[in-house]
Length: 154
Image (cartoon, rainbow, N blue to C red; front, side, top):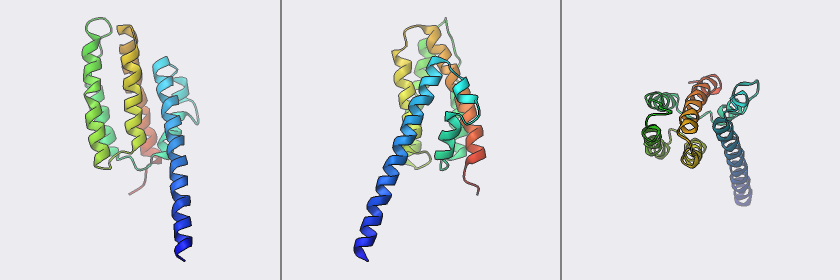
């Protein structure tokens, strides 16, 4: 009996690891679509955001809306001072990590913010940075819709 439980625990850990790897691959695809401006990948039927929402049913909807509201409060300036918009976006990252510490979001949601932040900092022109943040705002709006649809019913 003991060995059966141990084997089952090992199999569960292996499945969880595979599931997380799938989520991280989805995040990379999502960030790539946001940065390149390929929003069709995020809106077509059976898209990558929809798949992400299906695999992340445990995301707290209240927390997701809170991030979305904070994200939408960022005024995007493509020609004025885009660094201010980038700085405000970067200030969201500690709050995402805090939500993870409280088990309100999972690692893949944190990875989404981290990966996008990295890409954002690597962009050269203010116009590209502003457009990327706008695309991220749109993607979050879609993620909320899919998460509401596929989320755990309480």
